[in-house]
Length: 210
Image 1 (tube, rainbow, N blue to C red):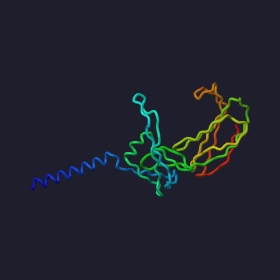
Image 2 (image 1 turned 90 degrees about the vertical axis):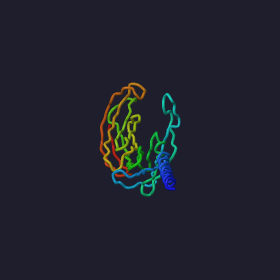
Image 3 (image 1 turned 60 degrees about the horizontal axis):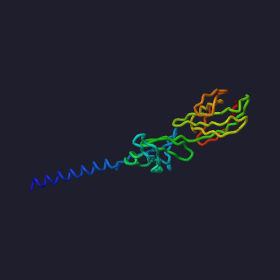
Image 4 (image 1 turned 120 degrees about the horizontal axis):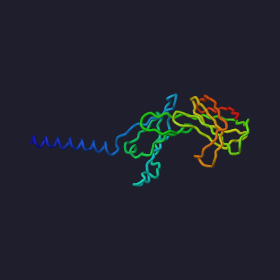
């Protein structure tokens, strides 16, 4: 009777251990994703967390295509749960997004989204430039870079996306290419910069003479 009892206990312990092992290895474990606003740390509810995986794998060349397979939404505390199975499947990235905020890659733990801001720039040409000239604006944020390029106008007004609650060191350049391809060499005709300090969601105005 004692032997049978001990055997029953051993079997019960083994079954519990097996169930725990299976749970841990079939994706039933979870992690928390937390999304907050950069600079303020305010939780961001209703942020979208998009999960991407490989949908076309070539044995010779590797992954040849990706697709989104799930979208998670943060609660009022700016949090959501992701399973280990989802995390493992999201081999091609996790992207955080929310209206009026910059998209960024992320994962379990705390993720900070930068708010948008905008500037309406009045551009005035004070020099003569060839018809092949291009104008490029650039400003770096914490997790992204805002870049805008276009054929250099004589005079124009454009909207340029900034990072709110941050110092935006905007650089600009006028150049002309020596050919019509992305990697052709180019000649810099003029360059400069300006610094703006927009609050989140703010719309500023500024001017550039080039």
